Length: 211
Image (cartoon, rainbow, N blue to C red):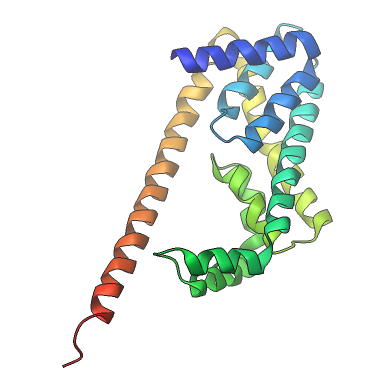
């Protein structure tokens, strides 16, 4: 593992040693607020710690799921504080963004928001970001909490159990989920590139002489 990841693992290990399962929950709450922190490392490490008797397996799953919900709720309220009109006003000032893009996003979220929040909890990076549009759209909080808790429970349990069963080889989980993270980042990069090119091309066409 690289030095930055090793430092993170050491820090989380210290949290778990000091606080037990609540320490793992705190690490996951922070991971939701700061996506660069890797739950793909934290969760298998919690499972490995549980396999060695450092904490209860059930407690590890419960506390990390609670941490996921706490972090998600914080970002939900960031979106709620921004609000639809403020986001539209920001979009209107951005060079490559149209207010109509925001409207289309709102329509998409209105149709698919339930699935996005649930399945988004299992997708690297998006598990944090999806909470913001949920807040902007003021998804009913009980519904948001239920979907977030359910999706997080599945994701957390899978990675914790993998670490628990792999034992000393728990770090292999991070290696394989890293492939998923990379694939997601590539897809996002392609989508952003397509968005920028389509906007620039559209501007060039609109600036052409109609004759």
